[in-house]
Image 1 (tube, helix red, strand yellow):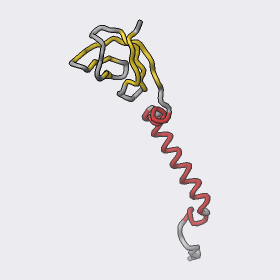
Image 2 (tube, rainbow, N blue to C red):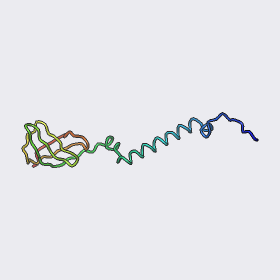
Image 3 (tube, helix red, strand yellow):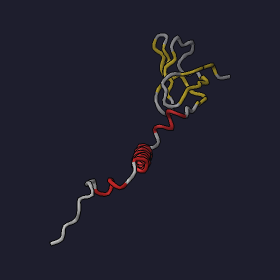
Image 4 (tube, rainbow, N blue to C red):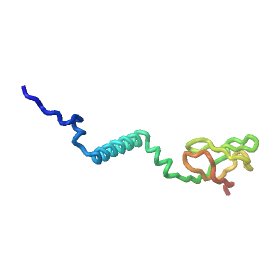
Length: 107
């Protein structure tokens, strides 16, 4: 019967330096992060890169001083709205942000 001396245990990671383990952990973390981004459709891009959109839209609803404009991603409001239902306005907004940055009557 043969006996193998105990080298301190730990298996594969016992012989790996701390620096290499840190690099390995970093690569695994980065890979998992990128996988989540791909599966979710890169939501981090929308947070870091703000896309400003300017387009002409029609006032769909007016209730008191509030106008509602239907945009491709969701309806948006204009407070203290001077326009009437059916008016064409040029609006500027940031994608995935509910606020309208600027608005004016289209000519």
